[in-house]
Amino acid sequence: MATPTRRLPPQQPKASIAPLVPWGWSLFDLLFEAQQLQMHALIVWQETIATLGKDLWDQCAVLYCGGVPIDS
Image (tube, rainbow, N blue to C red; front, side, top):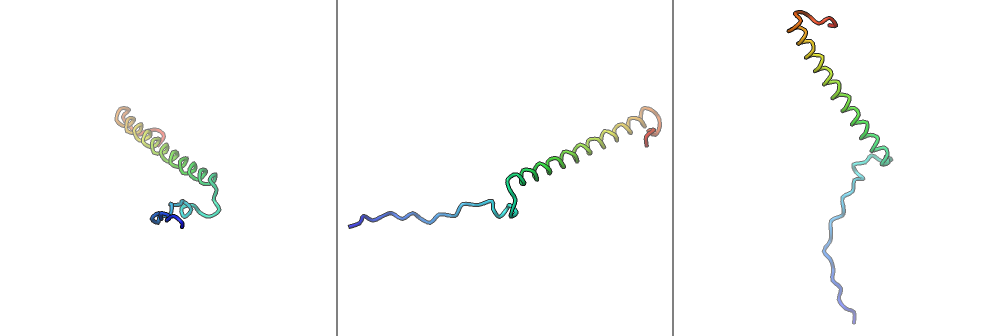
């Protein structure tokens, strides 16, 4: 006579990132895309800081030098 076996309850399937990844993309492509997004964010941030610096310099020139900045 065979011994009864215990049945495990059904388990949920493991989540996959396959639906999130466009078909045909490799890990290199995903990392390259992430790097491009980071580079774009860095450039936008640097442009913002540069604009802030120029505005502060213009305000300083108008306030303390008594006129309109030369390069405007």
